[in-house]
Image 1 (cartoon, helix red, strand yellow):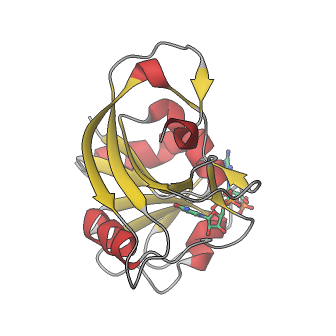
Image 2: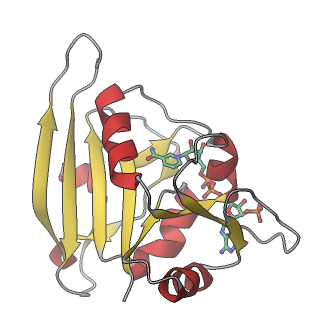
Length: 178
Ligand SMILES: NC(=O)c1ccc[n+]([C@@H]2O[C@H](COP(=O)([O-])OP(=O)(O)OC[C@H]3O[C@@H](n4cnc5c(N)ncnc54)[C@H](OP(=O)(O)O)[C@@H]3O)[C@@H](O)[C@H]2O)c1
């Protein structure tokens, strides 16, 4: 079985972007993302993939698009999360890392076993949301706290959440729980 992990940096009110790009600059979080993603199979939306072009070295990017003629190098295009999972499973991958953006997180959330969320202490007010999750279904298994310093003008916490049940309950955004 392929484990599905969603990795994202989310504002305190539940957004990942104001519209385009990442709305903060957190070098230690970028370092954490690079280390976690190393050598993994990644699932990205076509928009996020185009923003990250040139970044992929030892990764296998699977790009989700409705464009049947899509071609990417390195990697390949897929039409659904199920297709990405099938490819990763056929290649004996232990994990598929879902790297966004907002549309792809929403598609992949029902399949997620694990969430690696950077909870950023900033209110955006509006933007592209991270999907709501149900608190009863997730438990925190690790936590890294990072305060402000010369390189980081915003504090953040990286929390790994593991799914413990599939119980629908009162919805809350990741941001609201931080
Ligand atoms: N803070 C964070 O951690 C974080 C992480 C990642 C991204 N981001 C930000 O999020 C923004 C992009 O998010 P986004 O939601 O606009 O775009 P996205 O999720 O990266 O990509 C959207 C594209 O994915 C394809 N797609 C979506 N649903 C699909 C489906 N059901 N079946 C097949 N293809 C589907 C479509 O491609 P086609 O149009 O080609 O059909 C769609 O235009 C970026 O600006 C990025 O900087 C933030």
